[in-house]
Length: 124
Image (cartoon, rainbow, N blue to C red; front, side):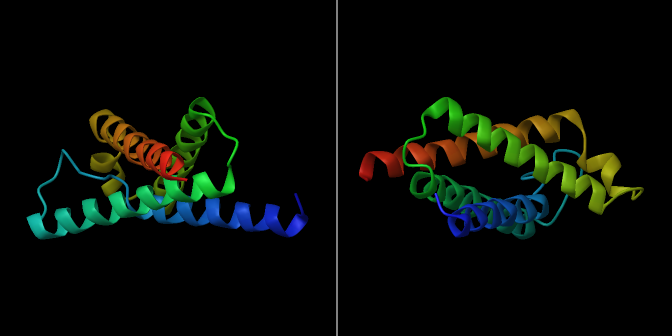
């Protein structure tokens, strides 16, 4: 693999980490928001993570499901870490970063991105 392709792959994964940080939590179980806003956030997150799965199919053609799950877990944890640092010492971290929100977010991201990878791999 050329250096240019490696840098492009890293840039794409960085994109998903940064935008994934904005999508956390995919649904906040602790705070009531406007339904339309929550629907928009959830829809955006699903589209983002579905796109991640499709990109993984193209960038990692020989990957197997355990590798994809491990990669997606790492990306979502990096995203959550970025979000935590962005809001460091803010009150929002107390109600965003709860165990139920984190578990729901990680599960939803892994489900959507791995499903998208699997579906696009079957089509390709």
